Image (cartoon, rainbow over all chains, first blue to last red; front, top):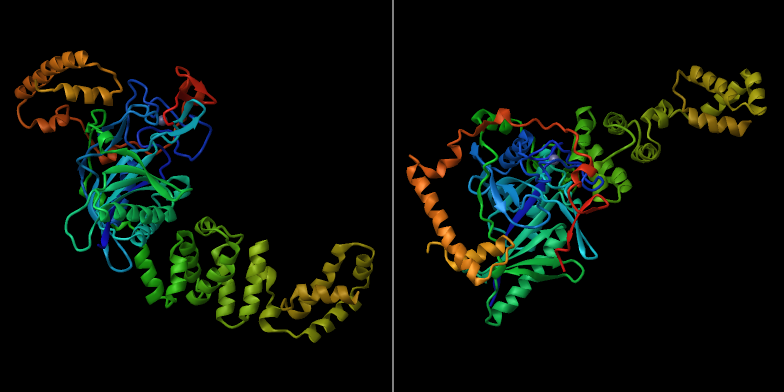
Length: 469
Length: 97
Ligand SMILES: [Zn+2]
């Protein structure tokens, strides 16, 4: 029998606020253990949580970008469980009134993955297990999270990957999170069940916890699919369980079964008031949403006439898009800008993280200058590439590398003639230079610049002069 | 008995408490009284008890929520002053095998 995969994801995204969700401690990543802590985020008796406004703002933005309905009257709840990463023995989360509900993420195929809900909650601390001890660091405790819960609409590991990539990109476009899976600012729990192809019921499901890489998500789903398929086809029953994925063996294993299922005993958080959000706030947030990834991709292809491949290489990185758009806004052509970015510039960046950061030793205006020279045919593509390569290595301005001589094509014989004239006209400077005063040579540059009204390539002239001397 | 011995044992487990049968049975009786008492309070509250969280008038407007401005945290010595700690960490008995 053939089985179809039915999967839903719960994605935790750390919000890029300055302070924690219920106190004014910094959310900065890392730091010496327990140095970003106060009575609230270490759960001292009597300490009271105070909700961070920006958490609500960011969650609303995320909700709107995922086409959710915003619950303008909302509250927080206690989720009780006893583990040392939670100093209060409960997590403040949302249960029956999440901030956002009923949205979707659209995949490239046009298929929509439903978003059941998005709620706000606090992150837990970090545990380090060593010797007979567990060491607890609460720096991350209280860092704001949104949990994005999808409907079981995902039917393959590839769809899961695309869904997570789309979510990640949308959150980055919104600037609500950096979504670095390797640093844990985005992580997923994956629910998986199988059913005979065409069936309309849901099978018993397992949940793989805390996946922090796209490829692990895909691999774990593939493994779990074959594991469950094997059980079902041999007449067995899949046991509902919480699993972990072992990235070294590539296998999933059971953490706890239904017997040990958690009972969170949610109840309304009495230390925090009900939040009343005016409708105008939601409208304001809606109006301020940036262009979202799929819209941008379409615009790059349809309006800017970039190839699908090039458009995709750009739209995946928010910082690249900003650079690219600022460049074409200064009048450079989209095609040449895009080709140089995805060619010469990308070749300098080995990792995805580097492309995400996109830090360059020159600004978009300087890059636009270069592209405009190429656009107008004043320089050829080879010179553009060479110049860009020098700018990437040494920084600086286009004019440091390309003189008007390059642009106008002053011929070499003419330049050599001028150099001879400059030497003849400046005997003192030549003598000084020969005596070791490097700087004396600038008198000769001055002569050449004057003679050509600044059109000569001084670097080329320099080479000629040194050869002649 | 409205709270069974099994439920008491389940709650004890969640609370990391170790109850034998005798104690669990005793607690079951106690819990009956507590639940009855809570029901009596509920019966005296006019209106919808599911809205009980708002009885204290506890609502906050979006505009009044806390500004996202960092304030100094506590020194780590203070944070860990009342606990067993090592290298700035809270130290507890190992929780995983
Ligand atoms: Zn704090």
